[in-house]
Image (cartoon, rainbow, N blue to C red; front, side, top):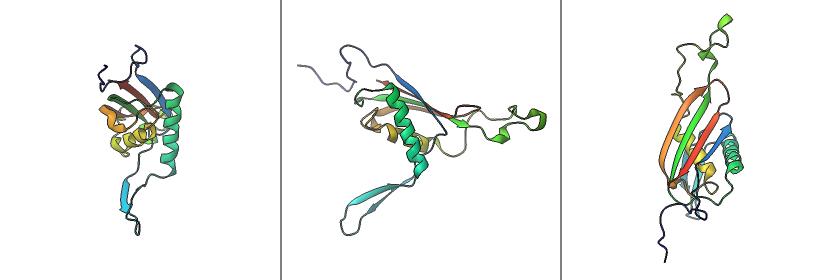
Length: 161
């Protein structure tokens, strides 16, 4: 008799390596969720205030994940690492003959909205039932928001534990 564990299936003796992919484009945050009871039915409903841009971003995340991961959704604990690469605003660059030159005072880290929690929420929601069954499986998270001079997007790495 084989004991069931909380670890990933080994696919015939092979350990699943980390899954890594890049999603190009400006990362979009997941909207706030609002729950309410439908009058007359008593059923609960949840709506998300994210809009079409969020839906488009989640489609892109799912698409780029499927390019590298074609197995059934993972079932065990996971480590999720995300580097959100945000586009730099124009005021980080010089003007005149210094146009295009990054100012020495330009920050490395993106400390303005959207916040990392809402960016992560949108990405996790996009990968549910594709890369994992439920985002509660992400037991170790590493999230960073940095500015980039080119190629904004999200670098994602998921490691089965």
